[in-house]
Length: 84
Image (tube, rainbow, N blue to C red; front, side, top):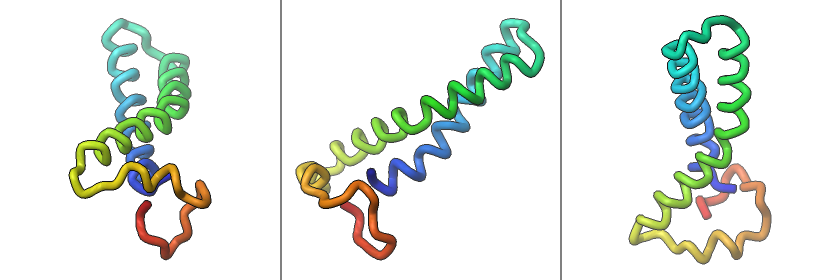
């Protein structure tokens, strides 16, 4: 788990939810059902998509050592620790 993915989770969740609400409303589905379904799908899909985006950003960064992520001692970062 890295801090970039944690920050991206909020952004991707809002983006997925908002896009689904627009799709449902444009298809003529108005009401709380489509909105709640969009929120649930956004919440479930936020973390995996944020993790994938974070990994892709870090893979494309020439100054980033990808092998250090697998050598991390814990999946929970310490507050004062440097980024993995």
